[in-house]
Length: 285
Image 1 (tube, helix red, strand yellow):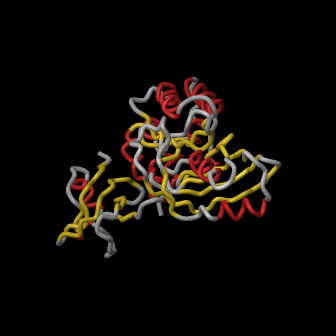
Image 2: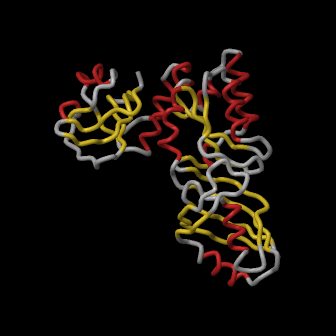
Image 3: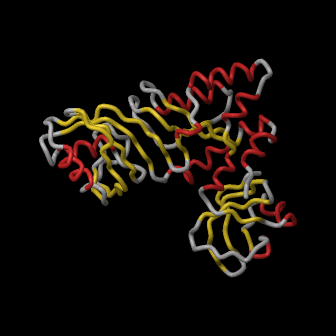
């Protein structure tokens, strides 16, 4: 078990800043990129990146990777997302009928990205895990949707509207992105305050909001490597059966995390070729 609290409390702050994340509560207005850029400049870092773009008017969970943790973003990103939003019906319909209609979307659907999207506008399949009515007042509907990464909620609302007399999204907030939830969100005001304290020599507030990148251990399986193998693995050597402390079996193509005790070594991809278990994709050296 990787002890994230211990890593957060004991790792030197400069090292933590270079290999951590901040779970930002994005406000309405700025782009996801501008929020990430603001974090980068405030902390005087070489690089930051955001995980999962939110439109300017959308609020909520926006994890920002710092420093070398940016290389890990792809392993966090392609996970389910949960949103709470308000959509307006163009004509009032009975609640029971609307609930049934929303449930009919809980399946794999085909979406075409909106015109202003940066991705190629080709139809693609996305899974809707849940689409629930939370509250209804006249034509305004409060809803919650859990969806596959890359699903456009605005487009989902329009698709529902096509089954009746029309509907469009008014407001949207992301409440969950993979393992990141609203529980440990930090708003930009509190972030700025923590940075100002840090500049005066008090690192306690900033340390509390830095999530060690080792939290990837909650996403990918961890394999413990022997102390005698650490030096060679840090040079990019593939992981052999003789390098690990257990006899675990991994699926071909699976991503695994190599640790020595509480020390992050690498992310590797399983190849299962003879004595070689996995080849490195990212080595923390």
